[in-house]
Image 1 (tube, rainbow, N blue to C red):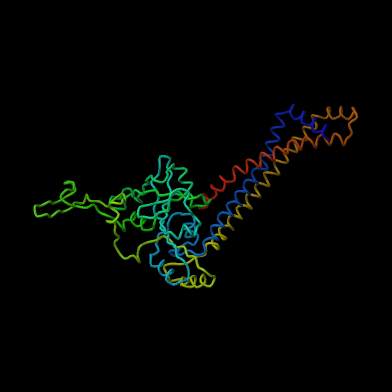
Image 2 (cartoon, rainbow, N blue to C red; image 1 turned 180 degrees about the vertical axis):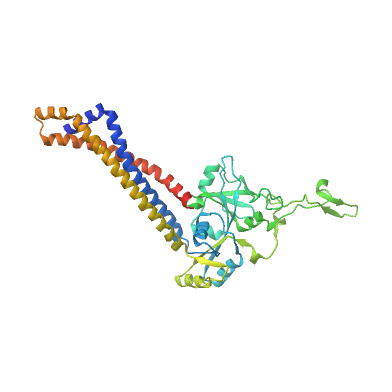
Length: 399
């Protein structure tokens, strides 16, 4: 067998053009379905694991899928909001822990156009997701933020730097103002959507929305261009140029305050973690009324429905890959057959020299093995490299 592989390798090297063509054709035929299968399975594992780790989600009544994807992957927020009173209602009932989420803003894009969702939440979220800082600390004060690992790597930001929020409407001069936030830390990599987000306290999100704000101190030493009236009787009148602070510092933090009823302050969704199965059923029952403005959904159930769509897509791709594989195999068979016809004189010479039909078959088998093994290695390597990228593109396509 050693001699057969030696002769086969010499033949393949001599006909290197034909050999490389056959080898890469085999590699591509194996690589396409393998990459699709690996990418879909990776996507299935990631989305199923994050869905199972999120027992219940409360949000405005509408699309269950949109609500779950918004909560799990920080997608576009729903049109309607959830009042803060729902968080207090769940926590005071003792049926579970309510974790608020406010996801209506993003960071300002960098020069490459990259930005991250600003996730306003509470300290319970980090414990719920098992997130801990790799550098620095979690947000403690108003105006602090912590970066997901992938966003920190792509942006080059680190603790001690600052980050600006992006206004929802840059043409609305009376709308929300960009807030310069202090980066206090970078989270450990979790392999989830949390790696691409920036986390702030929910109160900071309300400041960005304009519900809470601070003002400059106005006195006789204030810039005259910011004053309408400055009389001798110590009366000072501020002009419209006194705008809310764009940065929260130790000097002005005490001046920030909120207007309105706290119970009505907006959230985009609420994650609920019940302690027992009975509590989960009781919470679902509270929001079962179809006339209610809010509803409670089970992310694992919604994710399973979404995966059914993915499985149908996988079957279609598998069928297409099988058809392409059959066509490629037929072409390769034709190439091998033509090769044998071209080598008829060579094989006849080997037979006349004393080589049996079994020996000639062994030589041909050795050639096929020498072509197939590198092709499989190339396909496995390329599939491993492409599966992660393909999984990301699949998430972007579906979400």
